[in-house]
Image 1 (cartoon, rainbow, N blue to C red):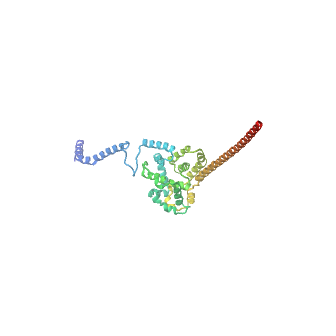
Image 2 (image 1 turned 90 degrees about the vertical axis):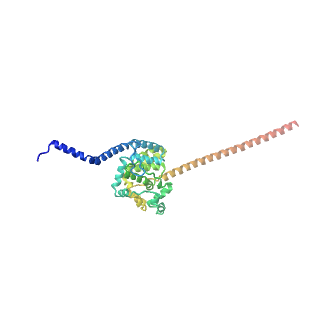
Image 3 (image 1 turned 120 degrees about the horizontal axis):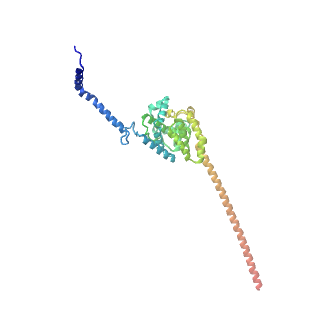
Length: 341
């Protein structure tokens, strides 16, 4: 049998390719076209007008310049007005990526309870917790402490905004969980929602979670009064740093399952010391100021009474002098009439 020549091989391959060309075109050309389309779509994700699809309901994908702009704007306005909870939430989401929120998620994944929370993804609302049931619990339990704190501060667990700007769906839930557990941190530490208490709790959360937003919130110390700033620097910041670092991650607490647990037992288990009662400290200061103001008012009233007494005495003296002058005048008139006689 003769060996095939190069010319014959070339002819055979050419005929084979020609015969298979329609099949190849049907098999591979659509894939090539799809790749080109995908490349166009990928390029379009970097355009403001062509965003990628959301990764979960409510998600808003952001480009890096947009993220930086929102972070800077929300940080500035939140510093000027710490009561803007919506902007504080926005600051938390735009500064948590790409590193910090993933690290916090990994902390939960390394803990058995944290893994259960990520698997179950429970939400904290007034319906899921049944506030009337919490009010029926003994006062020393976590549930009763939590609901009494809500009632005293006049807040509700239903006011927490939905996460929108975290790209990963699981990390978005981690941020949502942190946001909804914030009131439990208030309750277990006893810190009120006044500006001073919020700053102290944010310092504690920064030491415990490492989220940049909580650390940036500490700069609001410069917006409080001088005596409040001194208390934060001397009392509450040392407490926050010491307890935040040594305590277990509070995100690994399944709060829905420990509502009937003694609150002090939970503090001991987590390694949290109760800080000085800020509400009582502020109440004592207000009472002292009222007493000082009342004392000054009494002194002023006493001085006013003394002045009135002095005015009254001077008026009587003047009247006596006037009466004496009148007597002398009448006596002179009598003497003059006697001389004329």
